[in-house]
Length: 357
Image (cartoon, rainbow, N blue to C red):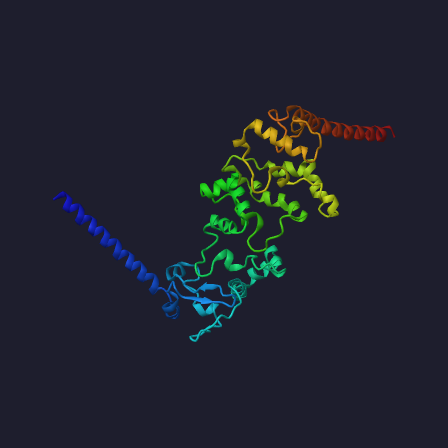
């Protein structure tokens, strides 16, 4: 009897799941406009395809559920993007290859996203495309075609999209302190690819111009007191860099010739770019060794103790560089005392001279 109840209960559960699934499927299909449903009468067939001029086969299947759940599902109909097609589709291949079709479709997006489209024209991706590299990414390579999701809702999804082409870079990023927090923990505070490289106006990262701009990129987060307080990280990293020899040199040489700009040290030169490690996790000795090796790249012959002469991103205190802190404190008191004493001496001298008259 007990076993029979289990079977009945299980049967009811399965039946309920089937009904819910059918209702959900019906709801998604009903949400689609009539013209879209008309197109899906054919394009909902997974076997539907088109042979192009290079004899490659392009699938014409559109997942109705994915389209309904995409950001365009409730806003656009098929002919908003596929304007050239009517009920009488071309019977033969009209494009030389699948890539030629994707590249041509790139122009379609600008009808609605004109501002975004114009920014892509200044990106390194467009430069590559214009230079003849057909594999350079266009809109649909990153966002998809019929299953476009809100990129602001899932930041990790953006980085995985970049990984389609930049596989090795993504692997290094995923192992970094930023990547582990985003990919493994789902932390939305850490920078993803677009946080540093932007979304559409992506610049060539190998240029001196981009390297010199890296402090501005890092300061967006590391200069945010509210954000850094959540993780116990001091925001003085930005202030101390700008006050340090390296930061001052970077500021002074921004308008200098490329030859002089090459010697400037920025954040990425010491910390890396995609493989940034946490100083807390690496340990004091490991960080000391890594710092010495980094300094030796520019300071030839630097000893293992060379980094100890640099305050890093610490402000002088009784804990960090006490001698520097005490000397600084002495001069902060001594210099105003001397200036005030000098002013008083001059005033007294003027008074005595005027009284003697």
